[in-house]
Length: 313
Image (cartoon, rainbow, N blue to C red):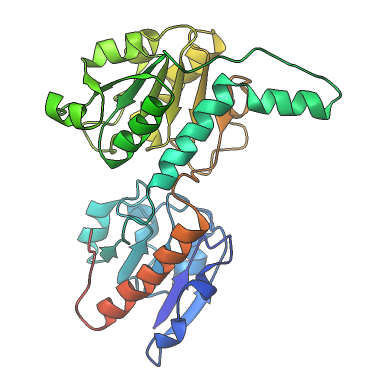
């Protein structure tokens, strides 16, 4: 049997787990980033594949070219690049890994927020080119933080906002006032959240209900000096509506770690907009998390081979 680990572009898979525990007869191969175009030839004779996040799409078209695939393991507990119905129809078992140190995503969200309101990238560029004092940043104390989704990560973001002296408001479809009170936030309507917030940060899960949740109307309701941050999943946010708002100066800026298509195409308009701060879906991708996820991936493979799959998605 063949097991391939793909998108191991940090080269951590081998040190993260004791792959010698694989039973005799299982051949392991490790690969860096694998594009959609490269995947069919590389994986055609694989029985098991471990992938990371949204880098390689496993859809019906690819699966038709992977006749031997029986197990697919993904980092985390969700992956927008996996067509779960198509995988189920093919009889492929799909497993995930445990959550890990999820507050890493909150840390990144605040990095994006602070980078935008303090103009940190622009200040750095100015100094490196001989300048000094490129712009005038803004303070956060007394400002309003709007949190879209108040689960583990949203609540973590809210705590930091409170420490900065911000008013925290929140909304999601099933959010209650009691849950908001626990997090130090105030429950508002969706419309009020976008209209009142100086910073809006997205922390809801991607689902059929949340796809396109933040669209033209929501972005259009935001203040012209407000910023929008997304460290959740790209399709929650209407990218085209955001691009148009940024081009026209309808909002001050956007900090994005996630996108509709990952990796973000080289010619994508977001790469060219000066009022964006972009990272490559690194929110939960810390060294500690990557090591832990490969450890879990090995457990997933061993359990599957023993006929008792775990963490099935």
